[in-house]
Length: 360
Image 1 (tube, helix red, strand yellow):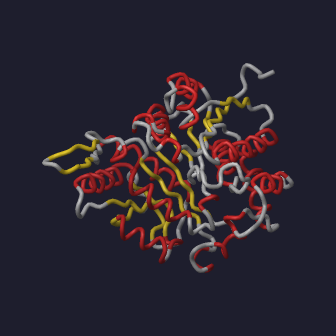
Image 2 (tube, helix red, strand yellow):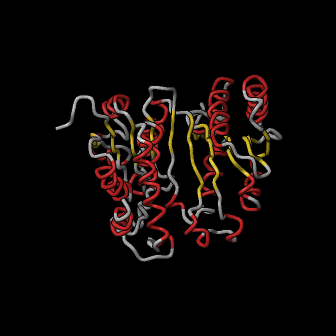
Image 3 (tube, rainbow, N blue to C red):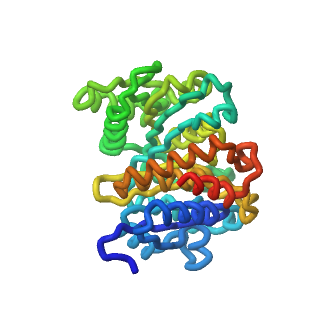
């Protein structure tokens, strides 16, 4: 029986390979945190199929009551023809907005054993440790108006990019605070590298101005550099180890973090944490998608989901010892040669987790 004062982790497996990798993370959680109460819920296409909504009000209410939420990916071609506000992705965006988890932390860390699996030369990624801080609850994904209309006989699509001073400053503050804790001195950008398109976008101008102002007011001890987002994309493949903390808006943060994933060996290795104000439960999820083409085949890499659990243990559940155990077990399994197909190996999803569990 669950003890009244125990912590609760809500599992929202999602769609495609989401249930498979979330199940493996559950196996790890049951060993490193056996007193942790694990609950299950529906999100995305699975929720739409069951309830006609990609996220129900009851699921959001329960998420707000838990200590942390671990999600799988959502979406797939099965739901391509449902109304946009009913699609799986609407449930994901609704969860992020409903919790107001505005700071998305995406670490791009290259485990030593995977340096040769990177898309870049080994010497460019050995020791790679980037933290991407992406604004998550504003910008073009949420801006209004958002529509497709017919004007003068032609179809016209509109997406609106919008940011306020407060939305920029709160995520920038999180980036500066994280850079303080990381205490990097090497590389061309050892503090915060803020990325936008101020040369062509008014939101980029405001972003650069507000980040600069906040830096002068409260974080002058942290190095701040600015770079246009397209230039940052090039720098990520030219000299990625130059970068410590990369700060970007919702759209550019999404793109740059996916690019960074290929530096680490596979997008199947990248976890993420979405954090709000103190007291708000964190939302943790693999960066990879639902991969419906391999769903149910046992081919998915569970490491991103397991490392997302590691982040939940560390950031929301205040269990650093358990988090350290998970991190070291993943490292040890990789060092012993354990690999799923995306890493050039032949282990199934469950076998990869088995290899990790051996080191717990």
